[in-house]
Amino acid sequence: MKCPFCQHDDTQVKDSRPTEDNSAIRRRRLCQNCGARFTTFERVQLRELTVIKSGGVREPFDRDKLIRSMQIALRKRNVELERVERVVNSIVRRLESSGESEIPAQTVGQLVMEALLQLDQVAYVRFASVYKNFREAKDFSEFIERDVERDRERIGPLDD
Image 1: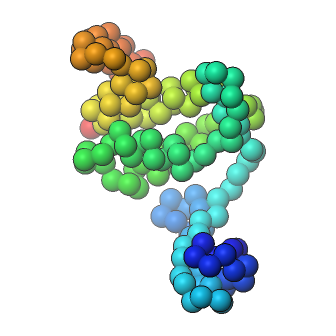
Image 2: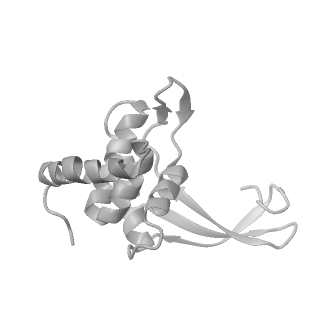
């Protein structure tokens, strides 16, 4: 594993343990060159996923981008990072087990919307405002009146 600080190729694993949900192995590493310590995570990847954007552009699926987008929607909301990690793991498993290696961005967005509705309704509306490209304040009220109740009925009871 290459050191992220000095780019040296020789790093030593000092400690390995599973994450709390057993979805990854957390490794503490030490660079033999500069002495820096850092953490890596090793996860099972069933297949390489490619996201097809609405304009037809293809890009590799990025789990970290998914976490960041959910964290932005959840900013200053009382949702633990551990719950976000579990939800992201669930979304990734669903995508990987779908049998498809190319996933439309709309599919990923819809899975995130469903997950956020279960986690936090405010984050759900925040994410929707970007995902659905709200332009005016009335877009929020229309979305809430039209879509939130429909999605709650479709997805099922909230975990609150």
